[in-house]
Image (cartoon, rainbow, N blue to C red; front, top):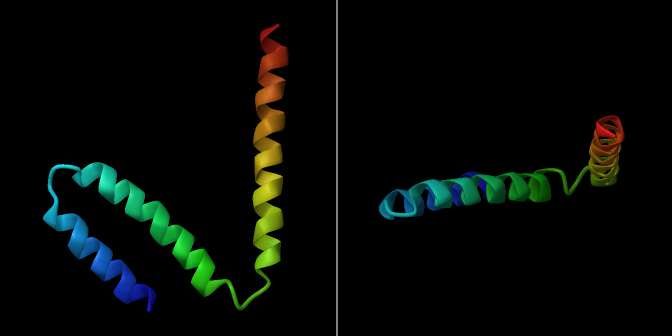
Length: 71
């Protein structure tokens, strides 16, 4: 199902040359999202949600450290 979806999306992006770059960027993120949704839905996808939250927290702490160092 995922391969058919990707092939259909890729065929659709190749037709519209005007917004080619923006469309491919958008489709790439959508493919990643659908991959996580379809492929990892049957596994413990809660672990990936926790990892994502930890990643965001680490980014926030990292930016906060840079803000304090600049003072």
